[in-house]
Image (tube, rainbow, N blue to C red; front, side, top):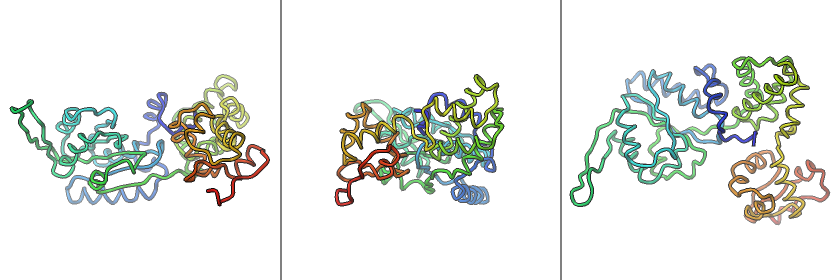
Length: 336
């Protein structure tokens, strides 16, 4: 799904090339940037290590990029890993013992750390020590290792999945929000310059921003696909007409909806008269995995007012009926 905000294989190298090099190039999340600037300056003036930080919010909003900028502002090294990549306490211990004072340890998808690794981080974050068990059975011994003071920056899309004790160890917690269309257009202008994309009409940036689901990752991905189309069919010139043709081939309408979104709405209205319908029922009707509906399609449809999530299941709104040109109306609020 091209408008999914989850990172895809093609995004890895392109996002590295498009990543902002300093805070002035980082567009959006103004409140977070102001708070970070204060925290960084205060830590530098006191000669202290920056407090641990937790970034949470939907994927594709710039959490990783901001972690790199923090390290750059501090003049520190950054070690990057993810919750799924850390399986054993030894894996985490190896990283922690190689950190120098003031270094940043960035753990993406930190909610996917297992309980044993969380417990290792408790003492590492609070006291900058870790306990390693050497040997097995009656002869096993616990070895305490001192760590250089460091800053853990955790990123998660599921804030509620973190345990209370773990959340409480982060001194700074920041919630990343979706971007305004004007901010998306600024990001696209910068990205097009870096990519060497020849955009001949300002309307193109507006078209992409409109379909980006308010997410920079999606916007940049759409820009690359339109550039591909223009290179093949329009001598490299990205015009509004070329963008429209590209969107048509990609199956993305003016509201940013793809075929999967439309299939879900159609099933909810045509098969279940607008709902309520449970997640498992919708998954069976659309031949999609429940997790795909819940994490890919549903968040955007909820945010745009196409569906509502109730105790009895998903319900199509009046806007969904109008969008699909269907007769009828959504269920009354008494059923919600």
